[in-house]
Amino acid sequence: MASGLLILLIIACLVGSLKPQIEIYNPHLFMGILVLLSLNIIACSISKKPKRIAAYITHFSILVILFGAAIDSIFGFKAYVEIKEKEGISLFGFSLRLDDFEIEYYPNSEIPKDYKSRLTCLEKGRPVLTKTIEVNHPLVYKGVWFYQADFGIDVDKVKIAFNGKDFKVKIGESFYVPERGIRIKASQFLPDFIMDGKEVCSRSKKPNNPAVKLDIYEGERLMFSQWVFSKFPDYHQRKGYDFRLAGFYGQELTGLQVAKNPGLVFVWIGCGLLIAGIIASIYKQK
Image 1: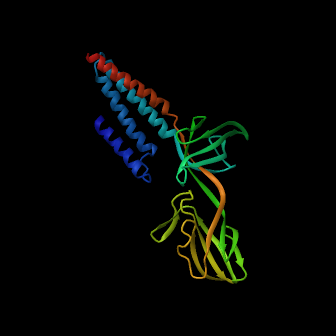
Image 2: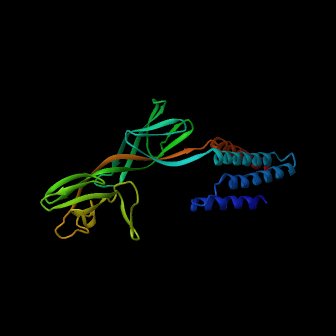
């Protein structure tokens, strides 16, 4: 029976990882499997002879690991958050502020070499801890882990070059070109443009393929719309309307993976006991 429950638990974990929309990690379902497995282990331990100490240690270690997994399933927390520079978020009774974000690229490349976030934890508005984090070097405060996971930019203004002039305009607003009698609206900006079927979207918040959608009006009549690309300036241009995305501006933001694992300590203790049980079993056989 124990083998069947372990297989069921592994399948549930695999399905939950591959299909996040399926609530495999629902506490009731996950806890049900863990409880049945724990009861089975306890029953097996009771049926063993007292002299088999190694077996008791091994079975107890598995129970401790399962207990830690149950604690995480019920009280644990995982999320992804994005914070703009000089702004913050509140969670678990304290605030987290992004003081500064830095990114370093490989020479003559747009491939990131390293990126860092200087974060400050605040209690009732007062700083209590400041640390610069990067990949594999998280910030830990009150049992909450903040991992550097991603970065991007929240663009709110673009610079459009047209008719020999540069025009700065906020996303959603317009500028006029009197000599052409047209009004141009910057209706949408995507930092990482991609075509998904007939829909357009952004793969990420990183400026990998910046593009702005322009709506060109004559009076109140929409003449046409077109996407203008920073890296491919000649793509999809209309004759007589040579628009260029000459720049974009906004706040840098950091992407953080947030995790709280209150059962992790029990998992580590259980792993230690499991190793001890295996060693005891080997020593007994000798």
